[in-house]
Image 1 (cartoon, rainbow, N blue to C red):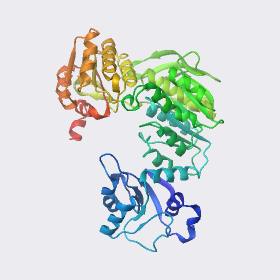
Image 2: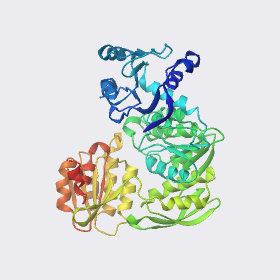
Image 3: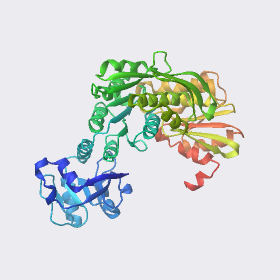
Image 4: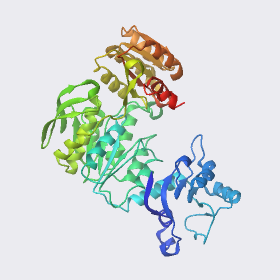
Length: 485
């Protein structure tokens, strides 16, 4: 991803006192990109050496330099070692810039991550787009972000988070993309612990906040569902009184957040009390869903090509944002026609099957949504489901419940992983008889291949750590397994 209108003087002024640097006295050095992964560095990049649990970005500064990085934010002590080893220049914010240097200029900061966040917040304050949307929730963040961005970009020049750039280290990269042309921006906001969404909101400064759901994702880390709800509520608590909180009317914990925000509240969903709601819903399997949108100034039937009831809710959130911004319904309606698959992808599979690739991640709520979608398919249904992680004390009961849901909609279950056995147990207890288990994704491939029949629809889903995409690659009819090695 590229940065816009950034120069060395910007980094220095963001990280030091404004009076420390005269722009006329700092060498002109354009920053074309900001990267935290040396593999994504392009010529002219600022590389930020982050220190993680298993990887230290300082070990990759040399690789970033080879790829064309011209500046690097580093820990001063590690930067001193690099400067001595490589013959590079090292400075700290507030010091004079060297007259000349070879290789990347190393800027020593106490905490490279905090410096990246400070730089991003400084850059964000340079611009005043009319609408900045923050989106959070236990599930549905990325799909909702895509829908909101699709509707907004049909009306205004809009910046959006790429992929799932929603963390304390990746959201700043999005903020650094902002420039004067953007009249709107859409930020996805994830969380690792309490206080992180508040931090992200300080950087992005949203005036519209969308909360999609509160579920047990991260329960192991957070301790309780109430703690998760409180962390998600940090977004709408950060909104200004002139802002708008857009809340899922179908989730009681989200609805309760209305009491926590100074902003105006708009509710969306299937509930009768929703301000933007869907009625007369007609699922059409993997082809999508038809429904009537009822909202202030809108009463119209639409067809959403992205299948699944959860995607209907995501679209309603987008429409609520569009109404708030004042996007004409005709513009939104045209944009809706161009929305196809969200999050999961449909592939033609081997032996004339269909593969629903929802392997990116899994939590109880998203598992249920995926299984509801599978239940709309008219052909034989095969569910290949892996472990859900970070569920803490509810992990056995949550997996067992997923198994009960599977029994309601699928003809065959292949449960993958150590926790997957609880899915299998739950399905058997609910009366399902065609149930198989496999210890991991690689082992599951042979089981899946042995069970599928021509015409089957195969859903593949599990937590990211389960690498369920290996099964997808093997089953794709286009030979993706060979191309991926």
